[in-house]
Image (cartoon, rainbow, N blue to C red; front, top):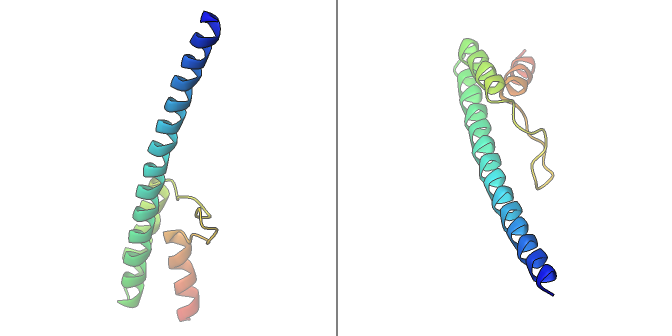
Length: 93
């Protein structure tokens, strides 16, 4: 009986740790997505202002940030800063 109670308590602690790690990872993902969105906005503004050099800087910053996920939790596609800059340049031609 004591062994079962100990096992249940250990399982509860393990579950609590897994939940805390999942929440922490969610916060990191949100911060990364916010950074990517900011880079996309800056790259678009740079291209709109004719500053392709600044758009390329956003692409480098995006790479340093790990590029972020390709798909968000809601299933929508994520466009990386570099992809956005090159796509916008291609569209402007």
